[in-house]
Image (cartoon, rainbow, N blue to C red; front, top):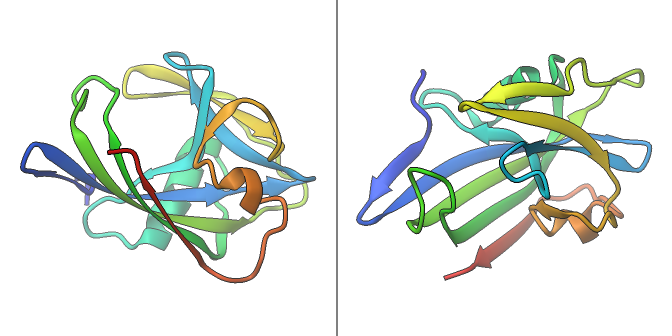
Length: 160
């Protein structure tokens, strides 16, 4: 169960990933890195072969925050076509399916570690409000997390 769910397909890649929605006091927790600090993304990552999406989001939250949180509910399914901008996938067309889960956040929760290492670069955790002007992914969080609803929403982004 150690292989990420990334598969080569013709000249591109298919990714299956999860993201955590960690809400507290009107803000949500995002991740940034030292390579592109002007851009944030959801806590989460790729599902590993053999695990469910819920198992993957619980694992990713623990790896990135040091806290084991339970899943509250699935909030969003996102299909996304975009071109890679990192070493190893630069310019490749990527088709990504993401499952974003609302997490049960303990009332006294604060991240244990603000900085951690992933793929030979430093990542950091940051609380932001939906209207924060910084660029973050997924962009639909900007409007959808202002008034969360108890249903699963579906989004498609196509940057081809």
